[in-house]
Length: 64
Image 1 (cartoon, one colour):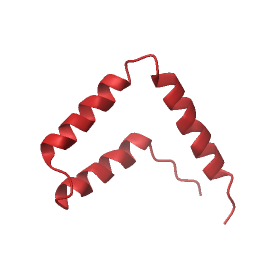
Image 2 (cartoon, helix red, strand yellow):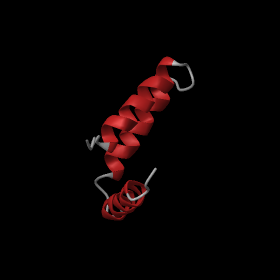
Image 3 (cartoon, one colour):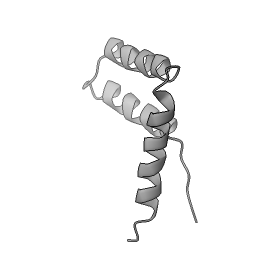
C-alpha cells in the first residue's frame, strides 16, 4: 500500500510540534508561514516545486 501525504501537511505537523514543544514561538512561526506564502507567489516557486519533486522521486526509488 502506498501512502501519499502532502508536503504542506507534513510541514504543518512539524511546525505544530515545534510550537508545542517550545522550540519555536508563535510569532516566529507566523513569519515562517507568511514567508512561505509570499515565496509561493514569486518566480522562484516553480524551481522549488521541481526540486521537491526531484527529491521525493529519488526517495521513493529507494528500496528498503
